[in-house]
Amino acid sequence: SLDYMPTLADLQYSKEDIEEAELVDIRSALPAGYRGGETFALARVKDYIWDRDLLKGYFDTRNGMIGSDYSTKFAPWLALGNVSP
Image 1: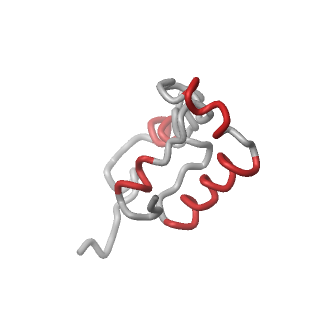
Image 2 (image 1 turned 90 degrees about the vertical axis):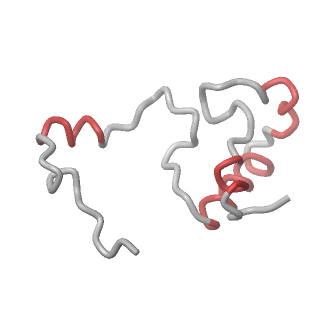
C-alpha cells in the first residue's frame, strides 16, 4: 500500500505548474467539486434526481458530454460500487 502520496512540489513541479493544475477546468463534465466515495455519490444522486429534478430530461440530455447537467455522471461511483442500482 502507499503510505505517502508525494505532492506536486515533491515531484519538482514549478509553482506556476502547480497553480495551473489546481485550477478548476470549466469544461469539466463532472460535477463541481467532484470527489470519490459513497458520501459524494449519494449527494450527487440526491442533487440530480431530487433537488434539481434533472431526471425528467434525462432522455434528451443523456448523450451530452460537456457540463454536469448532461447525463447523470453516476458511472464512476457505479463502477466502484459507491452506489448501486
